[in-house]
Amino acid sequence: MPASDLKKNREILFAKFPPGQVPEAADDLKRLDEVEVAPRTERAVGVAYELQQHTLQELEEHLEDKGYHLDNTLMSKLTRALIHYVEDTQLHNLGAPEKRLKRSSQEAYVKAWELHPHGDHDDTPPEWREYK
Image 1 (cartoon, rainbow, N blue to C red):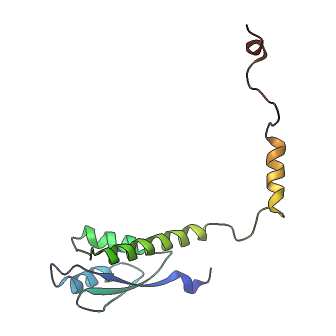
Image 2 (image 1 turned 60 degrees about the vertical axis):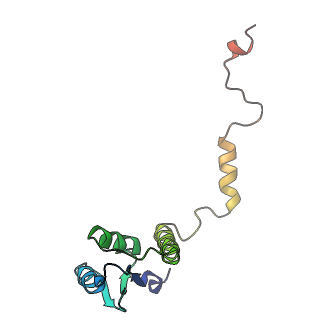
Image 3 (image 1 turned 60 degrees about the horizontal axis):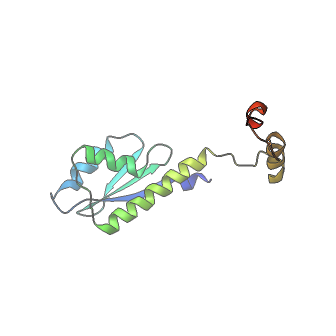
């Protein structure tokens, strides 16, 4: 994954009430390491961060813990949920191996099949099978 894919530029949208949250929230976010913050509009703050350092969900939870109110319209909730999912997936994929472990995908199945008991295997002890 290219390093440019890990640099995230997001916007955090705040609720209409209480008004005036953006300047205080921007100051609060500026205190965090590895986060660039810029107030964008009356209700939005722009944040830039490296995905390996922070996630949007973490930043939003930080703000909510401090008492800020994020926008809870359906569109905002859906957008945030999608971003959270994408970032979680990217973080998960960073830990995944880049190349296959086996030369062919079938080789893994062949080895597993050889080790797996198959056919008419019955785990019941012989004395119980013949009990009448």
